[in-house]
Image (cartoon, rainbow, N blue to C red):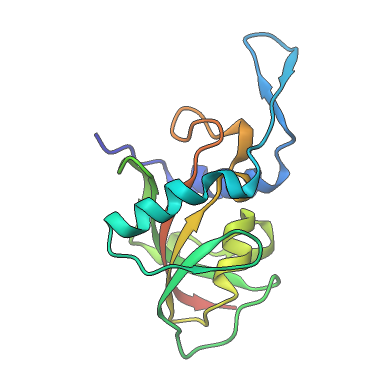
Length: 165
């Protein structure tokens, strides 16, 4: 079953991934500590996903894996860029947790998104497309983004940067 989150909710989730401390809410106001997986802990699962899905990944020194499908010809992206994108976010079991084809509803400040997007999208220019194989620590970490994204879940994103400011 596909679960689609609203674009506004995803903007909050993407931004929240960077700002989330390593705590996980319990049923009450108290929090229980959680631990992010080391970036390298997800490598085998990410590489297996890549093989199964015809992705030829390149390893970034940070632990992010990516495949540039098209480098783009527009402006080079920086942390200060506002990106207008179409994308699909998938768990490694194939469950799509979010997607959008309407780039006009995005306009995300790149510097406020999850670490994997900040690193990966700067490898392409506006008009480019990239596939990101994201270690959980560079996504939503131990907190996840319930109910769509479990704790310590490695992720896959297929992102096209339609335009940027």
